Image (cartoon, rainbow, N blue to C red; front, side, top):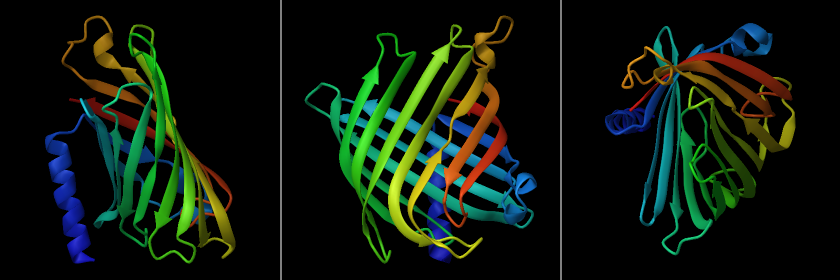
Length: 233
């Protein structure tokens, strides 16, 4: 576990050095649900998306914090391979983290659409998902991502939705589940797009809503809103 934790810290430091944005979230989930009273209130996210002539790379690293320090960590990294042009790409992805999160490996295909000025777009990825050490490791996942910048870039609506198969047991009612859904739409106010704000003041303020069904150790549908800040590089 110590080696895993150190590896995550190294990954996070490396990520910050070349990140596109760093986010700070204050999570209200523990105040909404009694069953989530121990849920971390503070989460940071380091996120990067970088296209190149062979496709693109995307990753994020989430760290959860409590009074004693870091209490949770999770990251995903995905590679889109497309050197032939067109909207379709080959997709390879890894997911992993601490606190009982099994390694997962995904292989699939992605369809990407962007409008001409890249103010809105979406992706759709169906994938085979291998979940290491799961009682039924062979599974599937469907992922949608989107972005929308409007009012001359003053506001952004972004996010993703995942639906996948994974046999697991929740900790609230000790029930078994076969499917998981989670979506995390984000709404941002981009301050540097307003008059009298410097162009290089890259701070955004907003919110993220985590809406899920049977996600992690939780039972049933949950809504976990945050207040958030984001600095873009």
